[in-house]
Image 1 (tube, rainbow, N blue to C red):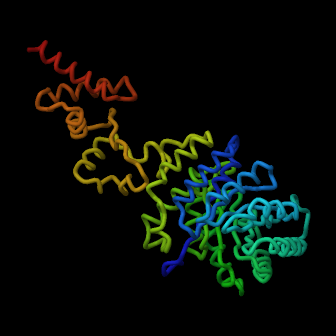
Image 2: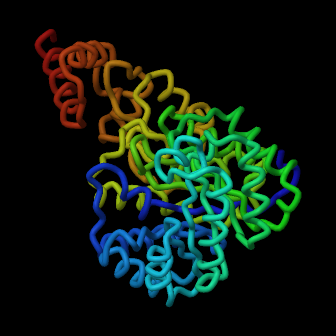
Image 3: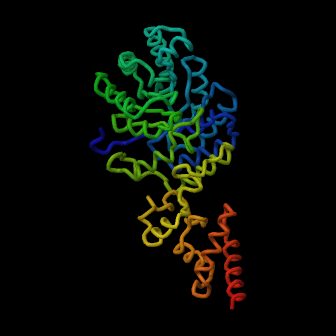
Length: 398
């Protein structure tokens, strides 16, 4: 458990794992824009996982171009345990100011058997061989344990000790199927910290969580509380299947819970660009952010309930966790519908330039509620028309 501030390093994988979302294909110029925006938000200690160069010439070209415009952050690409992949990774990143490679090592029994058809000791030998090969090109060699959360702990310990001796700077445990819980995933990192004798030689012990059970953020935070100091994440939670830990949610967890998540980089992030980046990723990915998505959803900072509107008007602390301007939101915080109350409507009337003393509020409120019974969305024009209707009714009665 974290007792003092430590640096938590982020490895944003929007451009790589995010692009592996079904039907997502970031074009060349789009990748450059996204990379630039994410770099402006992250701290200088953080990394951008920029792609898988062995996939295509376009990936190589994109990574090379990103290297020219993003010099603040580490740039990383992933590679299988294949010399071709490693050679291609170097070709893509050779001109990057700060670069590293991430070798994928499938560790679980299912992956060892069905993907590689190797025994545990064979996998260790294969990993060591390719790490040494990658070290010819890269000072920073990371390894990621694919399906790590379903791997036998004793094998994880043995493998990790050997790879640290080989010189890897980082080991990341991937919850590839999003099947871990905060309890068992946190314990995973506790055991690694306590039982790997040379663990202190690592610069980074990371977590890369998928969201298949909706636990990616919780698992990532549990990992941090239990000894991880690096977290993989993607904007809007993009990624395979149900996606990855959301970058924006992780950043705001650090911002809002500094006593629990003692991240020394907390004050280095460009929080005010979070919403702008989310919209950019939404536009280029073609995947619409759900309206009630935490931090970046359209409904995240909007209140309709009369109880909530009344509370907000008295003090924003009643129903607002933080100032939405922190993430770059400057829109309306009230919408009006059947759950809205009198105080909220009085506030709205004044904003529309109408003096509530000039209309029969009881009559207006009754007409408003009746209108809401047959209409889902209430606009400013609807409210103005209801004011006219109320005045007309009162004139007829008069």
